[in-house]
Amino acid sequence: MLRDTIPGLERIFHTDIDTPKVVLISGPPGSMKTSFCYNMMTRYVENENTFGLYTTLEETVESHLQNMKSLGINLSLNMQISDITDLREIDMIVEEEEETDYIEFMEKMLRHFKKEKGDAFKVFALDSLGALYSLMEHEENMRKKMFYFFKLLRDLDLYSFVVMERSMGAEANLLGNEGFLVDGVMMLGIDRNRGKLTRYIQVEKMRACKHNMEKHAIEIGKDGMKVLGPIFE
Image (cartoon, rainbow, N blue to C red):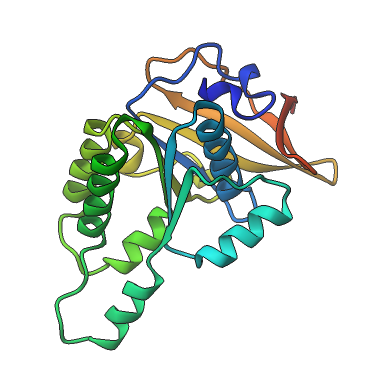
Protein backbone atom coordinates (compact mmCIF):
# COMPACT_ATOMS: atom_id res chain seq x y z
CA MET A 1 0.00 0.00 0.00
CA LEU A 2 1.11 3.58 -0.53
CA ARG A 3 0.94 4.29 3.19
CA ASP A 4 3.54 1.55 3.75
CA THR A 5 6.17 3.19 1.55
CA ILE A 6 7.79 5.42 4.19
CA PRO A 7 8.16 4.12 7.77
CA GLY A 8 5.70 5.92 10.03
CA LEU A 9 3.38 7.10 7.25
CA GLU A 10 0.75 4.73 8.61
CA ARG A 11 0.63 7.02 11.66
CA ILE A 12 -1.05 9.59 9.41
CA PHE A 13 -3.06 7.50 6.94
CA HIS A 14 -5.53 5.23 8.71
CA THR A 15 -6.75 3.85 5.37
CA ASP A 16 -4.81 3.60 2.15
CA ILE A 17 -4.87 6.13 -0.67
CA ASP A 18 -6.51 4.62 -3.73
CA THR A 19 -6.01 5.56 -7.36
CA PRO A 20 -6.72 7.75 -9.16
CA LYS A 21 -5.45 10.65 -7.06
CA VAL A 22 -3.83 13.99 -7.87
CA VAL A 23 -1.98 15.21 -4.77
CA LEU A 24 -0.14 18.48 -4.14
CA ILE A 25 3.15 18.12 -2.28
CA SER A 26 3.53 21.69 -1.03
CA GLY A 27 5.91 23.57 1.23
CA PRO A 28 8.68 26.17 1.51
CA PRO A 29 12.27 25.76 0.27
CA GLY A 30 14.23 23.20 2.28
CA SER A 31 11.21 21.22 3.46
CA MET A 32 12.25 18.13 1.45
CA LYS A 33 9.29 18.07 -0.95
CA THR A 34 11.24 16.49 -3.80
CA SER A 35 12.96 13.99 -1.51
CA PHE A 36 9.70 12.94 0.16
CA CYS A 37 7.92 12.52 -3.15
CA TYR A 38 10.71 10.55 -4.82
CA ASN A 39 11.33 8.40 -1.73
CA MET A 40 7.64 7.45 -1.53
CA MET A 41 7.42 6.69 -5.24
CA THR A 42 10.58 4.57 -5.48
CA ARG A 43 9.56 2.40 -2.55
CA TYR A 44 6.10 1.93 -4.02
CA VAL A 45 7.31 0.82 -7.46
CA GLU A 46 9.83 -1.54 -5.88
CA ASN A 47 7.32 -3.06 -3.45
CA GLU A 48 4.64 -3.49 -6.11
CA ASN A 49 6.96 -4.14 -9.10
CA THR A 50 5.26 -1.34 -11.01
CA PHE A 51 6.53 1.59 -13.09
CA GLY A 52 6.80 5.29 -12.25
CA LEU A 53 7.65 8.49 -14.11
CA TYR A 54 9.29 11.45 -12.36
CA THR A 55 9.39 14.66 -14.41
CA THR A 56 11.63 17.43 -13.12
CA LEU A 57 11.57 20.89 -14.67
CA GLU A 58 14.09 22.41 -12.26
CA GLU A 59 17.05 19.98 -12.34
CA THR A 60 18.89 17.71 -14.70
CA VAL A 61 18.45 13.97 -14.26
CA GLU A 62 22.07 13.70 -13.06
CA SER A 63 21.63 16.40 -10.42
CA HIS A 64 18.39 14.86 -9.16
CA LEU A 65 19.91 11.39 -8.82
CA GLN A 66 22.97 12.75 -7.04
CA ASN A 67 20.79 14.58 -4.52
CA MET A 68 18.71 11.49 -3.82
CA LYS A 69 21.80 9.31 -3.34
CA SER A 70 23.26 11.83 -0.89
CA LEU A 71 20.15 11.45 1.29
CA GLY A 72 20.31 7.65 1.35
CA ILE A 73 17.26 7.29 -0.87
CA ASN A 74 17.49 4.14 -2.96
CA LEU A 75 17.16 4.54 -6.70
CA SER A 76 14.99 2.19 -8.71
CA LEU A 77 15.21 0.83 -12.22
CA ASN A 78 11.41 0.91 -12.24
CA MET A 79 11.46 4.71 -12.07
CA GLN A 80 12.00 6.72 -15.24
CA ILE A 81 13.28 10.26 -14.63
CA SER A 82 12.72 12.90 -17.27
CA ASP A 83 13.96 16.47 -17.38
CA ILE A 84 12.89 19.05 -19.93
CA THR A 85 15.95 21.27 -19.83
CA ASP A 86 16.62 20.63 -23.52
CA LEU A 87 13.18 21.97 -24.49
CA ARG A 88 13.67 24.97 -22.21
CA GLU A 89 16.91 25.79 -24.05
CA ILE A 90 15.14 25.53 -27.40
CA ASP A 91 12.50 28.04 -26.23
CA MET A 92 15.22 30.50 -25.19
CA ILE A 93 16.99 30.26 -28.54
CA VAL A 94 13.99 30.37 -30.88
CA GLU A 95 12.19 33.38 -29.49
CA GLU A 96 10.11 34.07 -32.58
CA GLU A 97 8.66 30.59 -32.79
CA GLU A 98 5.54 29.56 -30.93
CA GLU A 99 6.32 28.61 -27.34
CA THR A 100 6.52 24.94 -26.46
CA ASP A 101 3.35 23.63 -24.86
CA TYR A 102 4.90 21.70 -21.98
CA ILE A 103 1.56 20.35 -20.83
CA GLU A 104 0.95 18.87 -24.27
CA PHE A 105 4.46 17.42 -24.22
CA MET A 106 3.85 15.74 -20.85
CA GLU A 107 0.47 14.43 -22.01
CA LYS A 108 2.14 12.72 -24.98
CA MET A 109 4.82 11.28 -22.71
CA LEU A 110 2.21 9.96 -20.25
CA ARG A 111 0.15 8.36 -23.01
CA HIS A 112 3.31 6.78 -24.43
CA PHE A 113 4.26 5.12 -21.14
CA LYS A 114 0.68 4.04 -20.46
CA LYS A 115 0.57 2.36 -23.86
CA GLU A 116 4.00 0.79 -23.34
CA LYS A 117 3.64 -0.26 -19.68
CA GLY A 118 -0.12 -0.71 -19.40
CA ASP A 119 -1.48 -1.13 -15.86
CA ALA A 120 2.08 -1.38 -14.53
CA PHE A 121 2.39 2.40 -14.94
CA LYS A 122 1.03 3.56 -11.57
CA VAL A 123 2.84 6.68 -10.28
CA PHE A 124 3.74 10.05 -11.78
CA ALA A 125 5.28 13.23 -10.40
CA LEU A 126 5.62 16.77 -11.75
CA ASP A 127 8.35 18.81 -10.06
CA SER A 128 7.39 21.57 -9.95
CA LEU A 129 4.16 23.41 -10.73
CA GLY A 130 5.83 26.78 -10.27
CA ALA A 131 8.46 25.90 -12.88
CA LEU A 132 5.71 24.84 -15.30
CA TYR A 133 3.88 28.14 -14.78
CA SER A 134 7.07 30.13 -15.41
CA LEU A 135 7.74 28.19 -18.62
CA MET A 136 4.20 28.92 -19.83
CA GLU A 137 3.81 32.41 -18.38
CA HIS A 138 2.34 33.80 -21.60
CA GLU A 139 -0.20 30.99 -21.93
CA GLU A 140 -3.84 31.95 -21.46
CA ASN A 141 -6.42 29.84 -19.64
CA MET A 142 -3.84 27.98 -17.53
CA ARG A 143 -6.48 26.96 -15.01
CA LYS A 144 -8.50 25.33 -17.78
CA LYS A 145 -5.38 23.58 -19.09
CA MET A 146 -4.51 22.30 -15.62
CA PHE A 147 -8.08 21.08 -15.09
CA TYR A 148 -7.88 18.90 -18.19
CA PHE A 149 -4.31 17.83 -17.40
CA PHE A 150 -5.39 16.62 -13.94
CA LYS A 151 -8.38 14.92 -15.56
CA LEU A 152 -6.01 13.03 -17.86
CA LEU A 153 -3.96 11.89 -14.86
CA ARG A 154 -7.12 10.50 -13.27
CA ASP A 155 -8.22 8.89 -16.55
CA LEU A 156 -4.87 7.08 -16.65
CA ASP A 157 -5.59 5.75 -13.12
CA LEU A 158 -2.37 7.11 -11.61
CA TYR A 159 -1.09 8.21 -8.26
CA SER A 160 0.01 11.69 -9.34
CA PHE A 161 2.11 14.00 -7.16
CA VAL A 162 2.56 17.66 -8.06
CA VAL A 163 5.30 19.53 -6.20
CA MET A 164 4.42 23.15 -5.43
CA GLU A 165 6.38 25.88 -3.65
CA ARG A 166 4.41 27.40 -0.81
CA SER A 167 5.22 30.06 1.76
CA MET A 168 4.99 29.63 5.51
CA GLY A 169 3.13 31.87 7.93
CA ALA A 170 -0.03 33.79 7.20
CA GLU A 171 -0.11 32.82 3.52
CA ALA A 172 0.50 29.12 4.11
CA ASN A 173 -3.15 28.19 3.66
CA LEU A 174 -3.62 30.12 0.43
CA LEU A 175 -3.27 27.57 -2.36
CA GLY A 176 -5.22 29.38 -5.04
CA ASN A 177 -6.98 27.41 -7.75
CA GLU A 178 -4.77 24.36 -7.37
CA GLY A 179 -6.22 23.45 -3.98
CA PHE A 180 -9.67 23.08 -5.53
CA LEU A 181 -8.52 21.05 -8.53
CA VAL A 182 -6.61 18.33 -6.68
CA ASP A 183 -7.75 15.38 -4.57
CA GLY A 184 -5.21 15.82 -1.80
CA VAL A 185 -2.82 18.32 -0.21
CA MET A 186 0.25 17.25 1.75
CA MET A 187 2.14 20.09 3.42
CA LEU A 188 5.82 19.69 4.22
CA GLY A 189 7.01 22.44 6.50
CA ILE A 190 9.68 23.57 8.94
CA ASP A 191 8.63 24.12 12.54
CA ARG A 192 10.62 26.78 14.42
CA ASN A 193 10.07 26.27 18.12
CA ARG A 194 12.39 26.94 21.07
CA GLY A 195 15.29 27.67 18.76
CA LYS A 196 15.03 24.28 17.07
CA LEU A 197 14.09 23.53 13.47
CA THR A 198 11.99 20.43 12.85
CA ARG A 199 10.79 19.27 9.46
CA TYR A 200 7.25 17.96 9.43
CA ILE A 201 4.47 16.63 7.24
CA GLN A 202 0.78 17.52 7.56
CA VAL A 203 -2.03 16.11 5.44
CA GLU A 204 -4.59 18.87 4.97
CA LYS A 205 -6.84 17.11 2.48
CA MET A 206 -7.20 13.62 1.02
CA ARG A 207 -10.45 12.55 -0.58
CA ALA A 208 -11.86 9.10 0.25
CA CYS A 209 -9.17 8.46 2.85
CA LYS A 210 -9.23 8.56 6.66
CA HIS A 211 -6.19 10.47 7.89
CA ASN A 212 -4.71 12.40 10.78
CA MET A 213 -4.42 16.18 10.32
CA GLU A 214 -1.73 16.85 12.95
CA LYS A 215 1.82 17.86 12.10
CA HIS A 216 4.16 14.86 12.26
CA ALA A 217 7.92 15.25 12.48
CA ILE A 218 10.05 13.70 9.74
CA GLU A 219 13.74 12.86 9.79
CA ILE A 220 16.34 11.92 7.21
CA GLY A 221 18.60 9.00 8.06
CA LYS A 222 21.03 6.76 6.24
CA ASP A 223 18.09 4.74 4.86
CA GLY A 224 16.02 7.70 3.68
CA MET A 225 13.02 9.30 5.37
CA LYS A 226 10.95 8.37 8.41
CA VAL A 227 7.74 9.86 9.80
CA LEU A 228 7.88 10.29 13.58
CA GLY A 229 5.21 11.29 16.08
CA PRO A 230 3.05 14.41 16.21
CA ILE A 231 4.52 17.84 16.95
CA PHE A 232 2.79 19.47 19.89
CA GLU A 233 3.02 23.26 19.76
